Length: 145
Image (cartoon, rainbow, N blue to C red; front, side):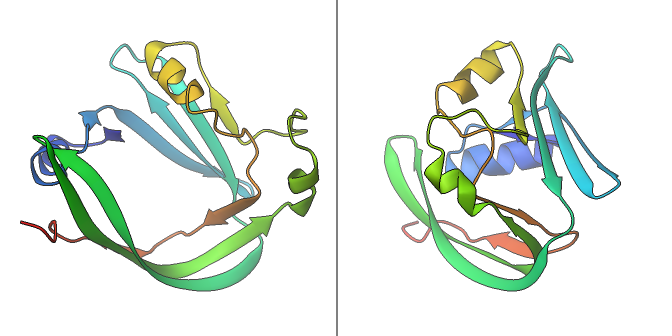
């Protein structure tokens, strides 16, 4: 899981047991799209995700659970986020299983990091995309500490 600072890496690894690494992550907005590019320690792009910034606006105020494993102990933490999102839904993708997407929003490169993501078999064009320019979010400390 890439993060942009050593502080976030230490926090994620020591508190939640999440395998975080410091890498370059660029986020840019051009026209009606926001693109995130993640690069490995050699500067190779392994992930590019482009999300439309336009769509139907919907307010989300969500709470969920994050489950992780730290030093052999299963942890449960609460996670929350709140913001006004633009939502784009492509219902036609529900009926096109295993058919290549016309315009994939997720592109994976050729590197060990990309190979790990490819093994997850993530669809290159999801059913729904959400964009939020600014939101509030938090990860609580594990509940079973």
